[in-house]
Each structure stands twice: as structure tokens, then as C-alpha cells.
Length: 436
Image 1 (cartoon, rainbow, N blue to C red):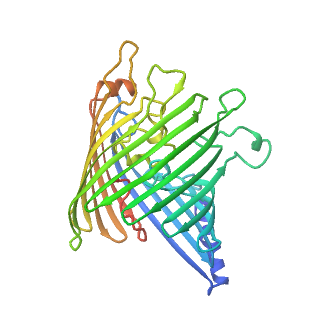
Image 2 (tube, rainbow, N blue to C red; image 1 turned 45 degrees about the vertical axis):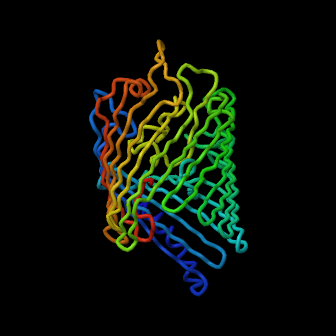
Image 3 (cartoon, helix red, strand yellow; image 1 turned 90 degrees about the vertical axis):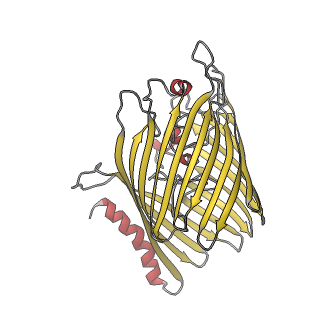
């Protein structure tokens, strides 16, 4: 039995053994999901150059989840296999595509207070700053400890994480070099909601170590935010969020950035019996940036651990996979419309107009702030409670300024298309990566 199957069996066997010993007291639940996504990338995430061809491939996620609960204790483990079709030989002894996604313990001390410790997703609000990155097959989880207070509509979560290369010397005293990861982090989040209003507050502080600089220095930054601001009246909803970031960036520059957004949503009609509904959204997001000729300070906001695919167009050319960081920022003005033909089928059309938030200078003159526009068409169909189909097409209409910011020599056509099969029988969320 190879390493993959040993890991999968062990993840299930341990809670099963516990259940067998205490059948009247414990509860064991096993669940899973399989995602298959075929993509055509012609400028998705990474802008396509004049001399490049489109990428065509199929990616896969198979995730097995096991939950065991006994009185006030819940244990959870999630293991997954992530791959691109064809990246592994048909005959293979070991498989590096297999990993543990989550492994945590949750203990309730009373009706309100609890602790949650282990590898876990941090998925809050609209996932702009803290998200589980569910759109990407590998997703995201943190090694974290959390104290939680939840009573009624009020929630207070306080937690932190401390990361190291390993537990033995000299590894333990070596600089922490895991990419795009904090050395330590602390968070506090409070949430409250009423009949027609909802808000939350977040404080996130982290320290990163830069092993490429002399002395392996640590640089701290603090993000304060109101991730959820929402008010609903009749068929209308006003919502938004605001963040401010300060401290030092990864190379030690003074950091001062912001991200603010506001939008208005209107439901034009809703037939609950038939499941028909039509809604529209108009809004904006302003993400601070740094002038191209600024060298002393960093004014670029970084949405550190968000599910960035949900924002600024589904072409993912801004902020996804660390693109556009420490750059000229982004002003995103958007209009969205979503029509639900029934409880099973929807289509959605989004339009974005993009501008640079800071000045773009080519060394001779300041360029126009316009970066271009994007159209995203999405659809989803629920075949059954266990099976959904989702797809979409996106097209980016770029400007000369966008081409300069992205390094020049871009193909005039930038587009992307995908179709995805989603098998998730016990999850209420039947679609992935579409925000409305």
C-alpha cells in the first residue's frame, strides 16, 4: 500500500477506532468532495505575451473529510489529492500531490466559550482579507490557535500562530524561509448582527522574517478593518468594507495602505416558489498603490490572505498569486447582474472598469490611469444535491498603461474560459468562486 493510501486509511481509522470503543457516546461522520475543472487560459493570472500560446489543462481535487465528536470535543481531519491531469505517471509508487488540508480539535468549555487548535481554515466575512481560497484546488489553511466566544449574534475570536522550519537544532534556530508566510501572527475579530444590519471588526498583526537581508530581520505590519458593513431595507442593500495597513513591508520600507469598498444591491423581483430572482449591484473598490517613481515608502495595500479570485474580475490579473503587489494599486468600478431562472440554474454578467490608484510614469511622462475593462460571464446548474456544473468566460480589454504596468509586449487578446464539475454532497454552497 503506497504512502497516499496509508495516509487516507490512517485519517479514517483513528476516529473509527474511537467510535468502536465508545459507540453510545461518540459520533463519526465521513464526507468528501471531488472537483474537476477544465480551463483555457489566454492571459488568466499571468498576462499572455506576444510570443506565447494559450494554456489548456484539467485540474483535480479529491478531498476526504472525517469528523469525530464526543461530548464537548470535536476532532476534524481533511486530506486531499491535488493534481493536473497527466502530471503523474500511470504507474507510480509515491505521490507528492497528497497532503493534509486541515487537522484540528475544537473543545466547548460552556455554551459560549470554546477553543480551536490545529491546522484550520480562517474564512471570514466576504473573504477579502481572510479566506480559505476554495477556488484554487489546494485551498489555504493556517497553523493556528483560537479562543472563541459565540452567543446569539455576537462573535469574538482571538487567536494566533507561530511558525518555524522544524523542531530540532539547527533547523529551529535558522531563519524562517517558507514563502508568503508569516513568522508569527495575532488576530482579534468581533462580529454582531441584527434584523437588518451586520458589522464586524478585525485586527490582524503579523511579523515576517526576511532571510535575504543581513541579520535576517523581522518586519511587522498591522491591518485594522471593518470587513463587514451591511444594511438591508426592503429590496435594497447597502454594504461595504474598509481596511488600513501600517508598519513595515517585507523589505523594511514604511507601509501605509488602504482598501475601501461600497456597493448598492437591488432585488428587482423574487418568486420564492419558482426560485426566480433578478438582482443588480453597482459598486467600487479602491486599493491604494505606490507611484512608480516612489522609492522610499510603500503605499500599496496587500490583501494578505484573502480569496482574491472573488474580487477585481475573474481574469485574476490583480492580487491573485501575489500579482500586482507593491504596485500602483487599483480602482475597480463594477456593475453586476444575476438572473436565477430557478432554484437550480443561474447566469451572471459582471462589468469592471479598472484604473491605477497611484501615478504611472514611464520615465518620461505620467501615463493615463486607465488600465482597461473586463467582462465576466458565469453560469451554474445544480444537477442534484450532490452534483453541480459551473462555468464561465472572461475577456480583458487592456490599455497601453496596463501593458506598461505588466511589462509590455502583451498579446492584444486576453481571455479565459472554464467549466467545472463539483461533487460535494453535504455542503450548502453548491458553487465556487463567484461573488454576488
